[in-house]
Image (cartoon, rainbow, N blue to C red; front, top):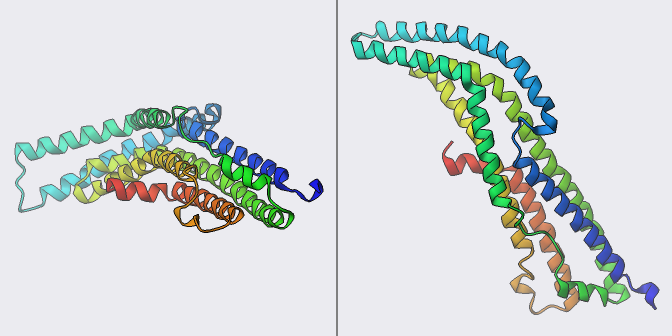
Amino acid sequence: MDIFKLGDKILALLEMVFGFWNNQVSLVFSMLGQSPVNFKGGGPWQVVESIEPIFVGVGSSLVVLFFVIGFCSESVDVREEMRFEVILRMLIRLGLAEWFVANNVTIMKAFFTTIGNLVNALSAGQYTTLAIDSTQADIIKNLGFGESLIMLILAALLSIIIIICGFFMIYTVYFRFLKLMIIVPIGSIAFSTMAGNRNVAHTASSYTKYFLSVVFEAVTMALAIVICNAFINAGLPSFTGNYEDWAQTLIYLCEMTFTIALTVGSVKGAQSLTNKALGL
């Protein structure tokens, strides 16, 4: 009897959940390709710009302090004479530090725009969307009551996992925007250390590396989503050849669930992957 055939209901559930995942992926790509300047209509960035002058004022004052520290440490060093080139180097360092403190937001905006354009080029509307294979869909439609009941339970579990993964992925992308907006004002203080000696200027180097890792994190996230979606749509795993059709479909759905979880794990660990890949 048709009442015992759950195939159509299972397919409807899977298509709804896969549609949800595709919408989340599309939202993530639109957010990753967006500059923090335009995020949420620019409201959060206006707050950042309103408090930026405070950090610039503090950073400009610290430039003088760190320059004095660097000058004293080098002038009392008996191994290094105060030659013209030494003084010139310190003055260049002072000028660069003041320039970075005053223009750090402008520099960061250029990075935001560049990375956003790169992410848009990666997606360009060509990334693979998640969809169930037509062969597996036909198998699900023709399942008996027992097999379809098992499949329904698995589809329900898969749906819960995909929904959780989708929201978790959105949370990770939102958290990246939050990190960027928090560290932007701090840049003025970090760059002020460039006026000091090598030990003091290490702070500016560490800040620059962290900033680059957070910015380039968007590219790693986009690559992870594109590649993992291609994994999902590659078809059945090679080891399912000896199983019954319905068992192959079960394995296929399990692999889809695993790959979706892998996608979210890659997105979550994007900053760590970026650090290792670029040596940051």
